[in-house]
Length: 456
Image (cartoon, rainbow, N blue to C red; front, side, top):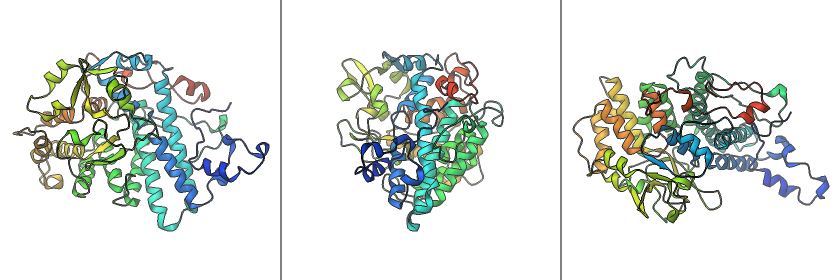
């Protein structure tokens, strides 16, 4: 039986193939699903177009366009988000009662593996790429694949620090294009450690091959930033701190002058990165919309207005002098996060502010004789707090972790921070089965090699 969900063959260059064959009679055109990779990727321009298509797949609202990051927020929520929506899939998420038939979860899996397959097609055709462009294209493709594997494994697998990552199941690793799927080609889930290792290999190679500047596409510092997040999740603080320091010391990025300017301004033109965006998803009227805005944004600013932020939580969480308390807005008596008050605003995946916080945390935990980057945890924490008008007198681990909570609120980090710091979520243990996505039943029906997660 053919699996049309796990590995869908989607080429950005498909349009080129269709255009090239448009002069043929309709009955002579092969079905789109069956176009061979060798016929679709013939030139360097074809491969470059396919790479752009990979970014488009990555930017889907079902991946880095926002929805899975929002779902991570919902799973981590205790009293910050007041959900009043009609989507049963998100009601299950906020109630920590996901079903293996949840279509939002299914869409995350599909989008992740569609992106991986697109990238694998690019990588398989590198021999067609102009020599001057080959390193950059390979680096961008591996950045995308490494990032996708990292986020898939931390959503669909147990946390790296939960038991034994060499035996806990992660997600399937697929490194070659899937042009057709038969039962003989079905892939089993690799262990968590193996998926992390693959992501590290891809991101490390990407950092080595990518240029320092590359427009709004991935750069070597995008790869370093993703490695910093990945190593932090693993608890490898020396490598996490070093990777974060490479981003900071590049001097390619700077904190915006105010906290609000780090996010798309209400009604502002879309598609422009801020000075602190190390990697951001470009959302335009042509590519879709901001999946965070879809639910976090009020109806006035293009959203559904169904994820309201508790005023009691805001008051209890932020110091009145903290400028970040102004990153919420009132719309008809309900409070919303202003981070996503723009339907076509970019989605920030890696911000410079997080790099400072990662370096501060790693230096605090390791207490090396010479701090990574030559900056003490107090200095890095002061950098973040100065922007929002707060004084800094100490930089304990608790101080730094609390600052992450304040700085990165509603950006998809809270669930993963809870897991790596072994912080329970309400009455739920940090490693509860219900805080891991189920393997979609539709995928398991098609591929009997996919073992379900515990609890589903």
